[in-house]
Image 1: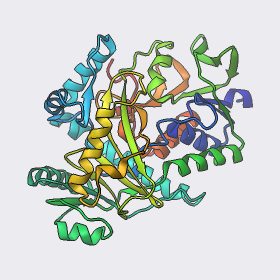
Image 2 (image 1 turned 135 degrees about the vertical axis):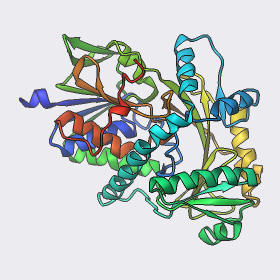
Image 3 (image 1 turned 30 degrees about the vertical axis):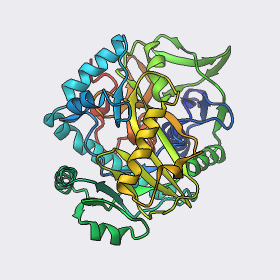
Image 4 (image 1 turned 135 degrees about the horizontal axis):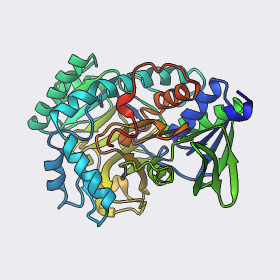
Length: 418
């Protein structure tokens, strides 16, 4: 195969795109990354909670989520919200979400999500040998405000142990011993020892640096409008009259991936789920572990000397505007679990918003695009985009080179919904 036929164009410079570029370059393929954001621009990979989560083996589509979603629909400050709108795509996505919110689906998906997260964790530790991005391997605490919340999380811990994921229920005193630098008002917690946390900005900077050092090219401010095809091959990505030709294409455009794949005849059920984060540069207390407020669905991550709070899933289209009510919901939840904090601590802190691509069954999409053997797509990771970045990139490289993946990935196929 000639070098031009081996060349890879990666559309999307977020965590999945950069990891795909990194592992493709390590496999000996020439790579160009097309990043839609301008220099210094933001993307969904920068402001997230920075967690690596083997604990997250239960997909978003799970029993009880429909009932919770309907209840939360009437609370603007709630953790999950679907903005009603006339959209056939949203209607199809919602129907598929409903169909997959079953125990059977959870059982069928748990092993693949476990395997992906554990392999990604291993690859993060390998990547940390290339440079420092603040990787901390002390586990995660699921903090439960109520006995009911603790009972539910204890059941998740039981399922985790059955799957081979380390988990144990701890009382408030043991939680305080695990994380002695933060006062917690909780009924108890679950400690997932294999979870990690890191600093997303430093990770993304390292990946960009390594892609360039390995001979890759990163084109900034290139919003791909069209994929040019010739028969059963994509031959170029087009942006404002510029053509980027390649032998292979990787579509990792996050929430915008569906728009591009429609040009190739693939109607991917995908919705953008907006999340928010607030980062305190000088918090009143700084925990050592990352944690999640179980009932409030808010993630908390120490990043150097700062502390990030991230949460909400707002399904409402490709809209990055900030809903102050949803931000208020995050802020109001903090004092319930961390009593030394107050709402005044967040005054003047600018909220960040990002769009996470969400599949209707809570499982990522990763595979060849039907009818185009030289094109791979990876998206739909929802809240696990950063956690699954390295394993997704490695799997993309496997598909590009014909290597056998570390496990079967048929369950991630783009066409699994028909």
